[in-house]
Amino acid sequence: MTLLDRLRWLLITSGGLGTSPFAPGTVGTLGGVVLAVTLQWLLPQHTLLAWGIAAAVLFAWGCGQSAFVARTWPKEDPGQFVLDEVVGYLVTILTCALLRGHLPGPMAHTAAFFAFRFFDVAKIQPARKLEDLPGAVGIMADDQMAGLYAGVSLWLLLPLLGW
Image 1 (spheres, rainbow, N blue to C red):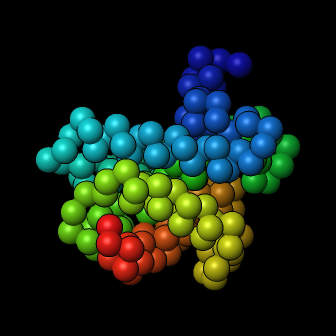
Image 2 (image 1 turned 90 degrees about the vertical axis):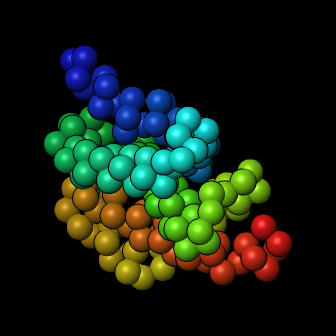
Image 3 (image 1 turned 180 degrees about the horizontal axis):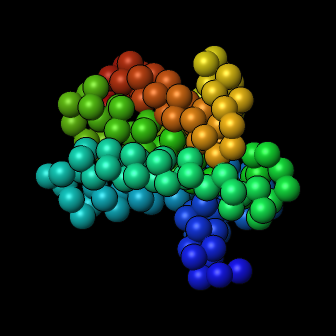
């Protein structure tokens, strides 16, 4: 494996989290939580912009990884590919923060993790249909729709919980 392929593997598996033998998508989502919290801590005045740029760049890059994924893993949507979960979490927390008008605290990040996982597994239309897009685009796109569903749901739910 070339150095470039090793870097691709690290990003796609979220530093190896996607190789978890138990629930790799859930474990891989933790990479998104770590990225979001780190950006929020490092760039408190520019967090939303940082989340948006990170999500856009990682989404575009991930969509372009079809050939690497096809030659690295024999499955159409391999469990090790968790970059989609990382970006999906960023979409969740960004959507929620934009709609609520303020940055999330620890409880909101926790709620975002569980909301995103719920909607990612539930695959409510059109998320399920987006999986049919070719290659890595299909792997990435459905999770972004799940992130939108989760972010809007949190916007509606968190005020009811007093968060």
